Length: 124
Image (cartoon, rainbow, N blue to C red; front, side, top):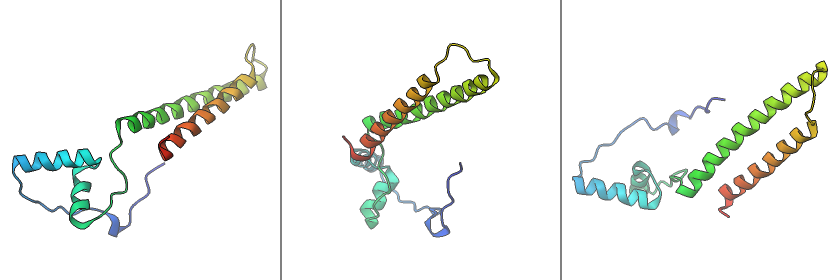
């Protein structure tokens, strides 16, 4: 699914250049990192009080986001396995696989995904 297009007014297509020293640049980058923002978002926040939509993820949050991606991949694989098993079951070629195990695995993945989403949304 493609990302939705932004309104013309919401697109950031202009650049403002500001001359700074190397020390000032390092300081801006460090202050932005310490605050959890990109340098661009930090500068917008400090100059026009434009609150960024999101912050740079903390290391813990980044791990949780990667975990969510992996859970999605695992869920997709389990769904593909279930689809194949249902095909073979319908054709009479299924042997030794309990469909309830697949259903249980999918349910457990849903529970784990919900728990990770809860931590991402509420931080605990």
